[in-house]
Length: 114
Image (cartoon, rainbow, N blue to C red; front, side, top):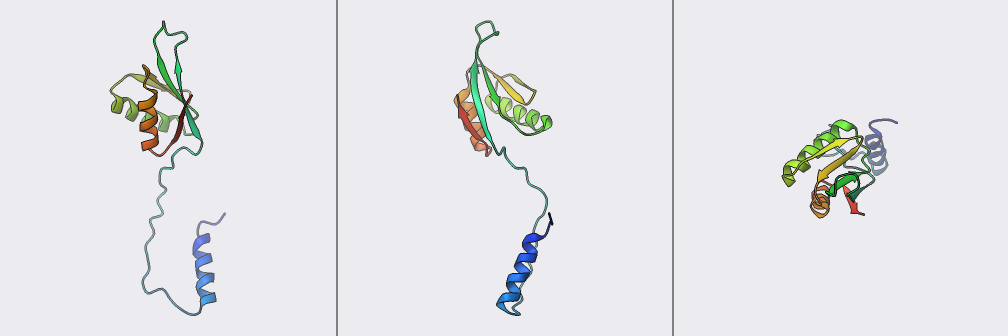
Protein backbone atom coordinates (compact mmCIF):
# COMPACT_ATOMS: atom_id res chain seq x y z
CA UNK A 1 0.00 0.00 0.00
CA UNK A 2 1.43 3.31 -1.07
CA UNK A 3 1.74 6.12 1.47
CA UNK A 4 0.75 8.94 -0.92
CA UNK A 5 -2.33 7.40 -2.61
CA UNK A 6 -4.52 10.43 -1.89
CA UNK A 7 -1.94 12.77 -3.41
CA UNK A 8 -1.85 10.73 -6.63
CA UNK A 9 -5.65 10.76 -6.77
CA UNK A 10 -5.71 14.53 -6.26
CA UNK A 11 -3.09 15.05 -8.98
CA UNK A 12 -5.15 12.91 -11.39
CA UNK A 13 -8.27 14.90 -10.54
CA UNK A 14 -6.48 18.20 -11.12
CA UNK A 15 -5.26 16.82 -14.46
CA UNK A 16 -8.85 16.07 -15.49
CA UNK A 17 -10.03 19.55 -14.46
CA UNK A 18 -7.38 21.29 -16.54
CA UNK A 19 -4.03 22.84 -15.88
CA UNK A 20 -5.27 24.61 -12.78
CA UNK A 21 -2.60 24.68 -10.13
CA UNK A 22 -3.56 25.18 -6.51
CA UNK A 23 -2.76 28.72 -5.42
CA UNK A 24 -0.94 27.68 -2.29
CA UNK A 25 0.51 24.46 -1.00
CA UNK A 26 -0.89 23.13 2.24
CA UNK A 27 1.59 21.41 4.53
CA UNK A 28 0.13 18.20 5.94
CA UNK A 29 1.30 16.87 9.30
CA UNK A 30 1.95 13.18 8.65
CA UNK A 31 2.84 12.17 12.20
CA UNK A 32 0.70 9.25 13.27
CA UNK A 33 -2.00 10.18 15.75
CA UNK A 34 -3.11 7.99 18.59
CA UNK A 35 -6.11 6.03 17.40
CA UNK A 36 -8.70 5.07 20.00
CA UNK A 37 -9.83 1.52 20.36
CA UNK A 38 -11.64 0.34 17.23
CA UNK A 39 -13.79 -2.25 19.00
CA UNK A 40 -16.05 -1.83 21.97
CA UNK A 41 -14.82 -2.06 25.55
CA UNK A 42 -16.86 -3.99 28.10
CA UNK A 43 -17.18 -2.69 31.66
CA UNK A 44 -18.10 -5.41 34.15
CA UNK A 45 -18.69 -5.44 37.92
CA UNK A 46 -17.05 -8.43 39.57
CA UNK A 47 -17.34 -9.68 43.17
CA UNK A 48 -16.10 -13.28 43.01
CA UNK A 49 -12.89 -14.09 44.85
CA UNK A 50 -12.59 -10.65 46.40
CA UNK A 51 -13.94 -11.29 49.90
CA UNK A 52 -17.24 -9.60 49.00
CA UNK A 53 -15.63 -6.42 47.67
CA UNK A 54 -16.47 -5.05 44.22
CA UNK A 55 -14.10 -4.42 41.35
CA UNK A 56 -14.80 -2.79 38.01
CA UNK A 57 -13.12 -4.64 35.13
CA UNK A 58 -12.55 -3.08 31.69
CA UNK A 59 -11.77 -5.62 28.97
CA UNK A 60 -11.63 -5.70 25.19
CA UNK A 61 -8.49 -3.65 24.55
CA UNK A 62 -6.58 -4.40 21.37
CA UNK A 63 -3.81 -1.96 22.27
CA UNK A 64 -0.41 -3.05 23.50
CA UNK A 65 0.19 -3.44 27.24
CA UNK A 66 2.13 -0.18 27.49
CA UNK A 67 -0.84 1.84 26.19
CA UNK A 68 -3.26 -0.04 28.46
CA UNK A 69 -0.99 0.79 31.42
CA UNK A 70 -1.01 4.47 30.45
CA UNK A 71 -4.81 4.53 30.16
CA UNK A 72 -5.12 2.75 33.52
CA UNK A 73 -2.84 5.32 35.18
CA UNK A 74 -4.88 8.21 33.72
CA UNK A 75 -8.12 6.54 34.80
CA UNK A 76 -6.95 5.88 38.37
CA UNK A 77 -5.67 9.45 38.67
CA UNK A 78 -8.94 10.84 37.32
CA UNK A 79 -11.13 8.76 39.63
CA UNK A 80 -8.86 8.94 42.66
CA UNK A 81 -8.96 5.21 43.27
CA UNK A 82 -6.70 2.18 43.12
CA UNK A 83 -6.44 -0.46 40.47
CA UNK A 84 -4.12 -2.32 38.15
CA UNK A 85 -3.61 -3.23 34.51
CA UNK A 86 -2.48 -6.66 33.39
CA UNK A 87 -3.23 -9.05 30.60
CA UNK A 88 -4.93 -6.40 28.46
CA UNK A 89 -7.50 -5.62 31.16
CA UNK A 90 -7.86 -2.81 33.68
CA UNK A 91 -9.14 -3.44 37.21
CA UNK A 92 -10.51 -0.49 39.20
CA UNK A 93 -11.33 -0.90 42.87
CA UNK A 94 -14.99 -0.41 43.74
CA UNK A 95 -18.17 -0.06 41.74
CA UNK A 96 -17.18 2.79 39.39
CA UNK A 97 -18.85 1.53 36.20
CA UNK A 98 -20.58 4.78 35.19
CA UNK A 99 -17.53 6.92 36.02
CA UNK A 100 -15.30 4.60 33.99
CA UNK A 101 -17.70 4.68 31.02
CA UNK A 102 -17.79 8.50 31.04
CA UNK A 103 -13.98 8.63 31.18
CA UNK A 104 -13.52 6.18 28.30
CA UNK A 105 -16.15 7.85 26.10
CA UNK A 106 -14.43 11.18 26.77
CA UNK A 107 -11.17 9.65 25.52
CA UNK A 108 -12.81 8.51 22.28
CA UNK A 109 -13.45 4.84 23.09
CA UNK A 110 -16.70 2.98 22.60
CA UNK A 111 -17.71 1.43 25.91
CA UNK A 112 -20.70 -0.38 27.34
CA UNK A 113 -21.66 -1.51 30.83
CA UNK A 114 -22.53 -5.18 31.11
